[in-house]
Amino acid sequence: MPSFLRSASFAVALLTVSATARGQGVAPPGASIGFADPVHLAILLSQFGVARAEQERMQVVGTRAGEVYISGDVRVGGPVEIISGETLTLTKAILKAGGIGEWGDMNRVSVTRLKADGAVEKMSFSLRRILKSGDVTLDPVLQDGDRIFVPRMRIGF
Image (cartoon, rainbow, N blue to C red; front, side, top):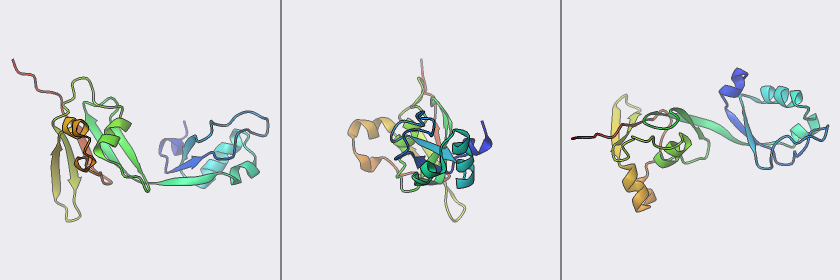
């Protein structure tokens, strides 16, 4: 896979493009693809036979505004992109990471944030409480560079 596809910076919705010049479908309506910049996108679409006129009908729907990093007992750890205009909360980020792992402790999820003055702020949240209460004000909004850690449950005998 080309490196520009691995580090997507933009999302493009295929709004009016439903078929290539050969009549083959490009993507389902409303689908999106990632690309690093418009030049790479044009090259990629040309390789798939999408005509220039069809490419011009595509619309950029969002740009990458940053990313948060998830580790610990989650299904898929690593970076989670924040799309410009999106409000990425703790629960949304964990859902994007595939959810909490089998032994993940939903009561002790930590978020570490580097503040502008260089200080490190560490916050702890009960994901179980956030989900059970349904109170969206308890679900923290994440910022670019935040680190999320889901520890394993403590089991005492």
